[in-house]
Length: 254
Length: 66
Image 1 (tube, each protein chain N blue to C red):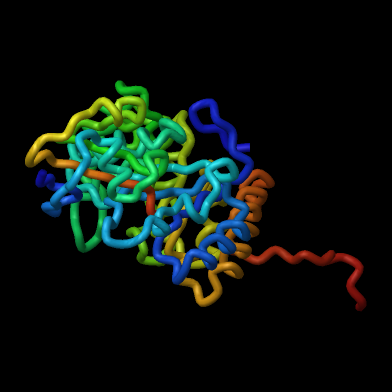
Image 2 (cartoon, rainbow over the protein chains, first blue to last red):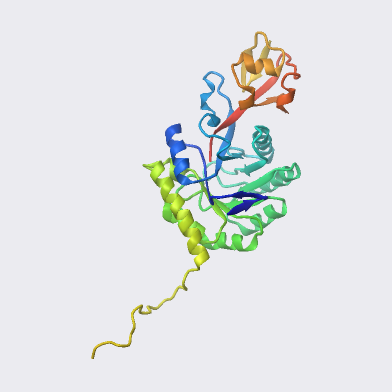
């Protein structure tokens, strides 16, 4: 069981709800993933169309834990404003805090992220901070009151997989709060490798939404997340630069 | 009365409160969050929050995101 700020979750896989080809596919994919936590974004209601575009028409908030994000925010002030709006929707006081620093890479503005984390934690928010794979920033976020730190595997939507297993492992080793790797995985082996680092969970969106078969990929990611976690707990054998036979070397025929 | 709603100027015909505005726009107050002149209006206060010419109103909800 994954526990964040006193709330327990049955799945270590969290999923986004963006970029699906249609809502039906999204609903089926999320069900196949087994995820309980789903991220959502705060945006203006389109007043010239009907209200059916809202995500709550498709996902039952009694069945899923809605994690409001601050995606698209480029300053601490903007992220704080979006976080407050998301909380006002009335589901919980968790926020996936993003303060983006660069449009090309969508890498986080860690100074803004720290500032926003401090403000929101004081306001009682449970901040899950999306950050890069830098240990010092992760430690500062924990000190600032983040209830979970979410380092990236690689840039958002890139599908490049886990670029720096060592840094992710180091962050996990040094932090007390849960570490959830967020962004960058492309396929099941990426998710498995992430979970094998010992982190508490993983969050993904594009790898599912842009798969040829999102439902099939969601199923694969569910298995990969569980497999990676199980392998981590089982403890892998040491790496060796030499071969060691698996069959007995004695009892061979003359 | 002209308001700026979600960034666009709109003529509002009969609403005098935020609650009435949501109804006039055909929106379910339980499904949206409203900011009035940069202040979030909690649901119990929607009916008592009065609108004035030129007010800035943001009406948001949850959409798909990662």
